[in-house]
Each structure stands twice: as C-alpha cells, then as structure tokens.
Amino acid sequence: MTAPAQRTTAARSRLEAVRARLELPTVRHAAGVLDGRHRSIFSGHGQDFDEMALYLPGDDVGDIDWKASASTGHPVIRRFQRESNLAMALCVDTGRSMATLAPDGTSKADLATFVCDVVGYLARSRGDLLALVAGDAERSVQVPARGGTTHMEALLHRIAGMITLDAPPSAMTHVLDLTLTWFTRRSLVVVVTDEARPTREAEQTIKRLRARHELMVVQIADALPTDFAGEVVADVDSPVRLPRFLRGRQDVATEARRVADTRQREVTDMLRRHRVPSVVVRGEDDVVDALAEVLARSRRAGS
Image 1 (cartoon, rainbow, N blue to C red):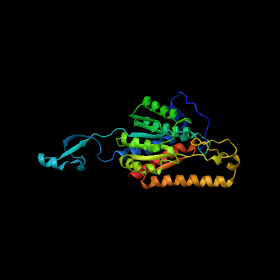
Image 2 (image 1 turned 30 degrees about the vertical axis):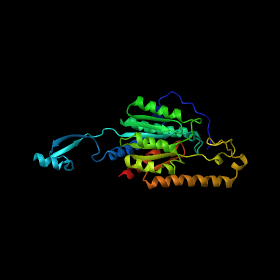
Image 3 (image 1 turned 180 degrees about the horizontal axis):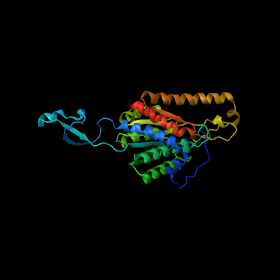
Image 4 (image 1 turned 180 degrees about the vertical axis):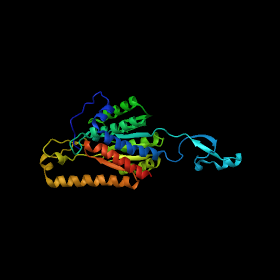
C-alpha cells in the first residue's frame, strides 16, 4: 500500500465544504435516492406502539386488533408512533491502511472522509440522525445517533482526525462486531473501509448486521506499488520494500493486478451472498455517484 504525505486537518466546516464542492443536481439525485431508503426502512408496523382507538372510515384495515374488537363489540385499531427521521450510522475503518494512496494518487483518507462528509451533509440537510462506530486494532469510538449541525461537524472532524499514517492497523471485523452489539435501532448502516475488507472472518457478523439493519459497503480502492514505478514506495503494514527495478517490470505489474482483483472479487462475492450492496471508489470524482448507486442498490435489495 502506497503512502502519501501526511495531511493537516483544518478547523473548518466540513458540511459547508461539501456544499461548496458539489453541484446541486448531483446532491438532489443522491438525496432523492436517500428519500426512497427512508420510506423503505420504516415500512410496515415496526414502530413503537402508541394507543388503541376506534376504527374510522379511511383507517387501514390491517391495523384492526380483532381480539380487542371482539371484546369491545366495536372495531378497534392499534396506532403506532411513526418515525419522523431516518437513523443512519457510519461504520468506519480508521486503520493506517486507510491513509495510503488510491489509484488516482489521492489519499484514501481524503476519499474516506469525503464519503463520510457527504453522508453527514445529506443527513443534516434532511433532518436525519447520524451515529458513528469507528476504530482499528487499538481504538474504538462510538457516538450515539443525534441530529443537528454541531453534532454532525464534531462527528466528521473526529473521523478525519483518526485516519492517519501513524494509526494502528485496521481491525474491521472488530468494528463491525461493535456496530452489531452497540447499535440496536434499525438503521441505514454505511460501512467505509478499503477494497480488501471486510474479510471472510467477518461473514457471520455481516449476515447478522444485514438481518438487523439496512447495510451497504463503500470500499476505497488501493493503489498498487507498480502504479508508481518511478517513485519511492513504502508499505505501511510491513517493512518490505519492492525494488524500483522490479516495480517497473510489466510481468510484476500484471501479477500484482491479478492478486488485487482476486482479493477484491472474494470480498464482493461474500457481500453478494448476503445481499449487501457494495461499491468501490477509485477517486474523488467517483464519490457522490458511487453513494447514489449503492443507495439505489440497497433500496432494491431491501424491497
């Protein structure tokens, strides 16, 4: 994994920066798909029970409580409190491999935080709630679902501050386990990791998360060492260095691409088995379109 120069996180509004970077039609498209997820995720009668009431013309016949109606002699319905906001949760890999380079030379950290910023921007603009579960091999952060600009800004800045080259190694299975055990409200869970994860060891957790929540995975693609044959390349997870003369060989580049494609295909196949939509982001221009695509696919998978 190729490492970029360290980034400096400025004290600025991440939500306003998203608005300045995105074209309005693009935002509307992504928000429109999210509206569809909002209607789907709370369909049916999974909301909290409110009260019993007499049936009136126009009420849903499916809400009639036939046992209570028989005892009272009048049709009685069960009313539920409707959810007014969609609960969303970011599940973020903050291991140091997330701070290396993407194929277009962009920092993966910048792409991952941009994905999170866009999710936060959409949640804030719709009045939805946003939670966070993030971590790596040595750290974990859990932030309850809340709304409002102050909450969103603090949450997004926290993510940006954690994804650095000196962070501990990734431990995405642990982060997914935390999401499963800690976040119980049915929600739209957006997993942000790299193209090598989640691995097969997380399969049972993925299966259980998919049963409890609407789940989608956004993977940030890795640059290969052979993509930068003429430059100094370091691997953040091992001291091994690939000599420059080897990085310039076509057969080495072909084999590196084959191994990376096989690894990524195994992850995609595992997610597909459990009907978890996923998308790979390879550069900054992909982010919003990729989110819109995976939201749409998640809607179809959940219907």
